[in-house]
Length: 149
Length: 416
Image 1: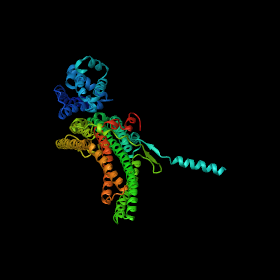
Image 2 (image 1 turned 45 degrees about the vertical axis):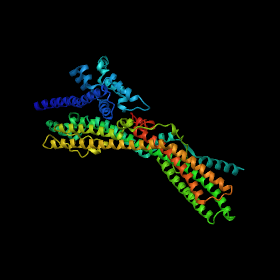
Image 3 (image 1 turned 180 degrees about the vertical axis):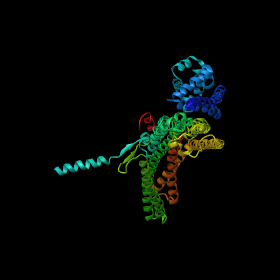
Image 4 (image 1 turned 45 degrees about the horizontal axis):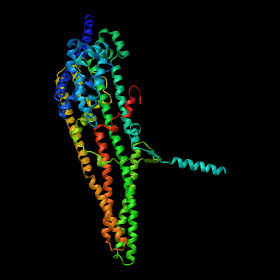
């Protein structure tokens, strides 16, 4: 009986830790892609290779937001990460601010057709969706922070 | 009187029933999304993949199994080995499997979009081919009428010694060649028409008439640089995007392997998961885990290589259509000039023939053939330019291809 009472909470603890670990490992990759994207946009490197690097970030971000939809544990994991890094730290690690995105968007929209990917085009609404998933409290904090806008 | 009235009503209704139904190029795009058999089948697969997500989510909840419950009543400690049934949410593999199912749904949507794009392109190309061949047939029939007039003139001249013996016969050979072309075109048109109406789900009884398309002002079109379209091409390509989703699935499978010591998921990956069926997920932490991880890593490398292959293929397709399009634009004036000169040359010869001059049959038939060929080439280049524009739009999902395939919108919370 004692063993039983010990095992079940341990299992619960392990599976709880895993969901946060899962979000963390997923976003480590996103961190690296975000850094590359900022570099490309600031250097105005609109070569195919440069743009593909930006596409990697925006695509991965959109995919993760799609996976997070309707998942309560995603909200909790984001909240835990924000608690660890702070709002500013979180956004500076994982979010490309709208002001930076707009530089790229201006290049994409110039011309007779839209030159970039659908995720770049829809980034503003995808970011808004992400903030909604994070919950109303965090959403307000994101809106107040410049690097999260 | 009654019979007359009935006959009039009946013949009127038959005539009305056989009235051709007109269809425009724009209607073709809408119809492919809703009626085409392959598109509908794939839309249902996307719906299946979406429903699979809901199932995977529900499978995280405890299942009712009377034998398990009976076993736990008899031996309470057996609950530990029943955890995958009693508390599937405690098995990490099930959570990773849920993520995989969501990713595979996204991949399935991309596959559907590619298929829909291809079917729309095929239907639009068939539509233009039918119009082109109808125009060609009309042109050949006009040429036959003209050839028959010339043949009469030559026959009369030959009878009165104004043309060498056998001239009319030699010219008739050319005329019959044109009539053979006419018959071949009629057969080709019937086949194209059948293929076109089948792809749009029309029955064989329905009589369909195609609305002519407006030929663009080719002289005012600008050449394209394929490099300008490359990023759009690759980032929108459903074939390439599917690979990105599959690579994400492989990351989840790797996690499943790492956490297999806490149980293996029994949840199905769904319709799109078939390509991952062969992946070994060890049941527990063992010596096989390292090899299982290596298998997944290798598959990642294989898929990255395949993705590169897809990128190169797409770039080559874009380049090929760009070269053809630019060449047609550059040479368009040449095609027009050739038509103008061949018409002038033939008309001049006919005038001389009508005025009694001794014109070589060979020269006359050659001149007529030049005109037919040059006009055919001009029509061909006009339709080829339109098809090239459509091909570029299909590659970058612009224009008619920029909207979502119709049935996907109806999948948002509802059955199609």
